[in-house]
Image 1 (cartoon, rainbow, N blue to C red):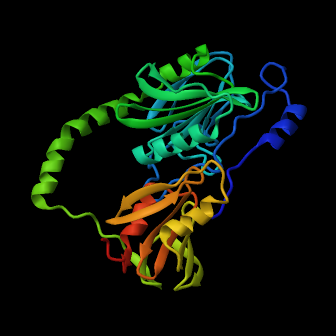
Image 2: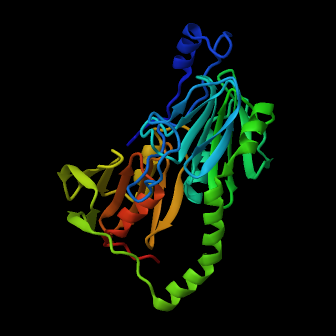
Image 3: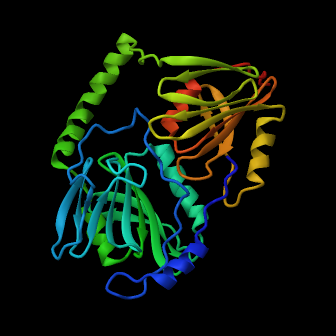
Length: 348
């Protein structure tokens, strides 16, 4: 997965020349966006039924109203429309948008892990540097946030992340700044639905008791059912249910796919060290920084080329073992790593 960061300057020029929207004025250029949105793993798929129509979209109306989607409710001002889900799954209750027009919108991403949320936000902060304003923080209603404004090819934009009742929220604003009245109105209205507020309170009260019970009883997590074991170079890899094999070239290469999300995963082995292999990839990319993780008792080095993409490697006695994931999550990655048995080098 040696992907470059998606840039849209050429597309912006074409769209600006041929489109007009939002009251008939020339349409501003869209803000840069990550190359892909994160999609859900089978474990993360929400069981909730969306509160809107089948296409998860409401047309703009002359009156403001409140829409509910997933765990949240949000104000949709007069002249705006609401859209649920994302381009990969219109029923995904973790994503929704409040749109004034194609080039003016608030795009919400909710229920991400702390690690994935901050990693995606930091990646955007390092990427969207044109006209970037200093990072600020504050509150919109019950949303406690940190964010920054920037210039998206001539269009005011912002990125922010925060929490409401312990649930992570990340927002990308296109055509608006953090100080605009529309931003304050829409983000200030964001709240948990009444039923979810009660569930959050109940779960908070029960959390301590549950933790004590699990510790005392030594509760074990449900075992993952690995349907195939792949012999890589000094690594045995268990492949869980929910995946299909694309290419089996073990012990050097094995490629498979998450049948639910369509995300592709590659396992690779080579003679270089993990640092050397990751650096080779980083040398071909722009605005992507090396990161380090400790997962499953193993130290990994790698990078996040776009939201939902992970490239990471660790050292083995034979060289390196690398995981290349598309359209995944950290939870999915941790599940896959839990199925690995490695012949690791001695650590001094």
